Length: 465
Ligand SMILES: [Zn+2]
Image 1 (cartoon, protein in one colour):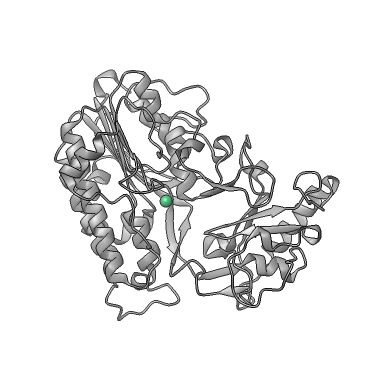
Image 2 (cartoon, helix red, strand yellow):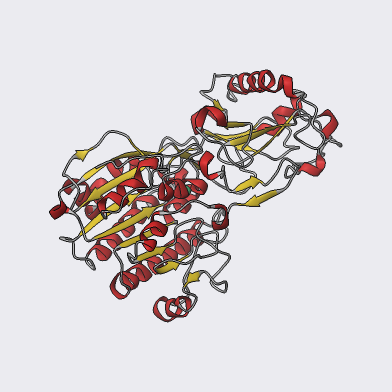
């Protein structure tokens, strides 16, 4: 990049879960501000990390390091090889520098708003408002702490996230999400105008909540789509609202000196149903419970007859499968010498689970060691993506069936998808138009490059510019 082209500032707008199919295609004509950024710069699909999940994807994007390197494999991670010791991966799990840590140490001013895994807040050279794992606005969710009083004065009751987004009350859900988004962008405008910054990054959770709550109403390809649904335009209307907010935020910056990025951590797709992975493991004799469940219940490690169990799993948008290894788990029974062959057998058998109609599924079962060059913390033994994420994983037991079309954690009709979005425009960014697939691991070095700060040697990606 020519020194004269370099932007003085970088503004990053994160839209959690925004997929290429909606932003680049279906809604493009209705979102003029985003379309103008695309037309004047570069845009294309951004391949998420493995797993393509909010935690750890935003941390991967802002550190330039893989989940294996971060040692974070999902929202809840095993803290050791005992049974049932899981911890929510909040900001304390991220030991690697984020882009704003590096810039802060270079005495550059930063503003960070709503980025996941930033609670509890740490020192930055500027302002930080923690993201959605912060408990509520009574907590010390800002750095510096008095900033939270300023927020209350400026935008009233700030909403970190939507409570109970898996609900049948769609009117409530849409109102909550709109309120949250309106207040977050009002706060963004306030911070952009009133705080010094060279790097500004915000993440809006609303798209993720809208997709999970309303996808089937809006996607004619969803098996439960009802063309007469009163919510059939809800996603389009929400993106139009987002686009207006983005336009208003862009009006607050000097575009000649400011590069702009719009990014998402992963995409979204229609979800057909759920595979009850623990039910399947029980049916196949890999998992044995102390008592046969008489009704559907949440899986809990205390239910398991460990001396007779070889594998168990947790549910979610993907399955994490764990093997009960002798000498590793407290009551492990799979000998270490048979671990790899057992894991291969299990992966093959999981991949051959057909769908509810008997059709073969395109299921992936990945080993952490094959996916990451470095594996820290306690990873699952297998990451399973049923039918390449067309189906989710259900952890509950006692469901009485392998397939379910009711989600065990409440109504949810979208799954995550591998590709998010990347749009960049402004000084320092060539007008390249549509750009073939880019990678989330390259975003942090690209941000640093735009601001003329060297990327640390141990960042795994490289600048896309
Ligand atoms: Zn996300």
